[in-house]
Length: 401
Image (cartoon, rainbow, N blue to C red; front, side, top):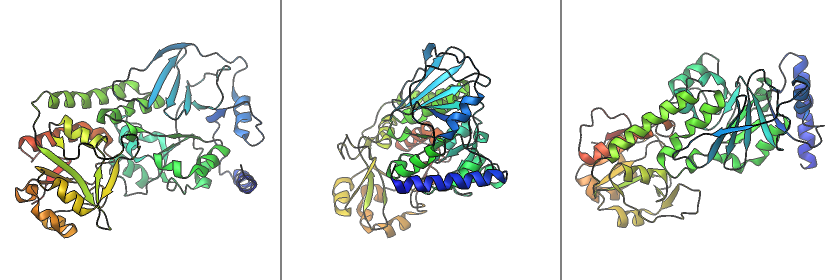
């Protein structure tokens, strides 16, 4: 840590100490990092040590969670109800059952999460739908979205009645509020990698930090399967399994039908007139394929890149996609369009597209990215679109007129 950062941190800690004298709370002792290093700054480690039983237990491996599609996390179970949750970047969370002591044989840098799990700070918007499906929104005390920006009804209700508070964006969190609310874990999106100083400051305050990597899953249901991670975190594995199986069943029903050769372009027009499309390895092209279609860009982008999108010039998009059978406009980024006329106002050359001339122009609803537990339904609706089935029952896609 640089001298300047250390000074800032010490000042912040002194401020929190003063707040504590005014009954504003102190950093949570339910979430600490196991470390053998000097604890002069990590004061919550000492606090945790004082609260544990004299005879700590040792971890005895029992089993591991079975995963079908997800590749970026794992869950291991140990005798006595202990659970070790591991994320692809090496972050480890040990969930300790209520009333149990912290095991003595832990590796360094393991975050201790003492049940009951509560006072979470959720920045990764895709995870809110998973917590909602688990009936666990009440474990989230702090939000990275303001009231009204959630498409998840339970989240908006929690913020409206004061049970969930806005604690700032990923790169500008309200540290004072986060510490005073005894935050146990910050669940960040991948954008936090651009603000490593935030992670450092959170850890200085004794707050666990993890990154939610569902967007890195190559299979659409791998994203859905992250509900098992959060189910294990909050002790609702059965509910998580039930929700996942429901989405997997939809996929099995859709993929049982014959594939089509119909092509699909999925895109949106940026504010500077470029066309943003998905890389061929992204989950959206995979969804189109699973629904029986064919994404128009077969080998677009760098398969080794973690990016899911790329921008191209209108001319390049026109040359590659003008004969596409269906176009789907991604409205979850810019608010969308309500008619073909509005779409043509954004990009006039689309009028020459085969899909526009044939009336096969579709749009996603605005809540697509927040509805992470609806991927199966979206695949089903893309399938229905390709099959020309009734669109009246669709919730995530609609035809532009």
